[in-house]
Figure 1 (cartoon, chains in turn red, purple):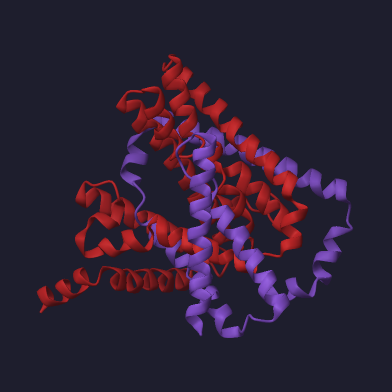
Figure 2 (cartoon, chains in turn red, cyan; figure 1 turned 180 degrees about the vertical axis):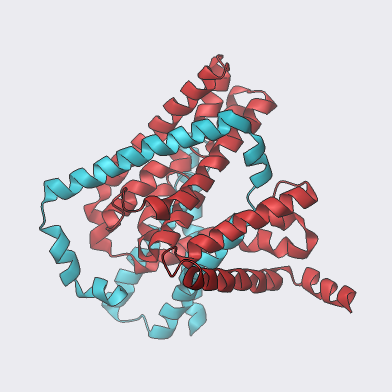
Length: 237
Length: 138
């Protein structure tokens, strides 16, 4: 019986993923209401549970794609992959107020520039402090601090060693995860209330995954504004 | 027909990615530059244009809005496939540079957003609340 059930789930990966994620969201909504009395947003808890599952999946399978490496949950990889993620992000633009977006155009561009230069400098300085003093390693780790996509691309282009590349990806990943989890907590400090502030945030915080998940957990209406700016990050880096 | 909305979304998505690739090639970086951002701008433009002509029935809108609403579940699935083990194994360099980066950026974001408020004065804030479109969204 269990064999048949497992086979059904594995053969219908995407459908299984819908069911699993639905369950996670349901559970996190319950936790949000009962344990934190609505103070921590349900989607923030859902993302945390997702990250926890990713750790567990990575430990069990030894792979690099978290839960998606377990064949039973392979559909998670499709559902949370770049294709559907971008599709859903584009769809959120449908609710954008064009006038709001235009007002913040310049601020968005400035923050985008700052958001690329600042992490790069900080990353390179930390790399230097830890003894990676050659220019190639410093640049690669610095680029990783921008986003985990820019890091390895830069590293490959200038010929960094593979452990530095791994470090650079790790830096970007840790940054994305901190942004995901920290945004709802720090929302008041960041003055994240208006579409304009979301665009500044999108430009400076970088990582699309971090920004979009962090804003989703803070205020869903702000997602398109932040994501609109953040998607230009990879290219600029 | 609900498929019209989804097809409109798909067309904007593909066109945006294509233009992003072209832009990347023109800049000589060989990656996609802002493809998703361009797609979003296209979708916003398409909505405004169709609304003006009144060729945007509710069902067509739903075809797009469904995917917008699926956004948070997709993000949860995305979180579930991050390489957490590698991120935590990276050790102090990765964690420290990430924390410092986020801290520096957070301070700058906070500073910019606060200064915006002061420069613009209290005028935009009440206007935001008077906007019927925004209260509707809330």
